[in-house]
Amino acid sequence: DYSDPQIFINPEMSIVDETLSTYTEGCLSIPGVQENIERPSVVIITASDANGDIFKAEYTGLMATCIQHEIDHLNGKLFVDYLSPLKRQLIRKKMKKNKAN
Image: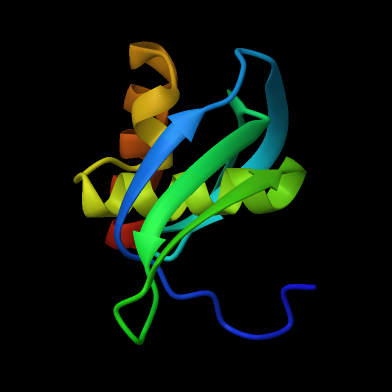
């Protein structure tokens, strides 16, 4: 149950296996853009919680994808960085066009 906010302080991620899942991702950093992104379907996160206690947990499916997306932000990476150079270029053009309008 993930109804409460999950807190990960200094998270470290381990990939359990190389099986990939594809989900459509979007981000407030790149408004109006959504693309299918492949990511490992199972990850283990080791982090501290809000009390400073270290925990380790396994996440699968959509939750694993969401956590990887957010950890990428901590590492300066956006979901579009997983796309081909051509797709990234098309997105840049679309964003420039939207900004001009």
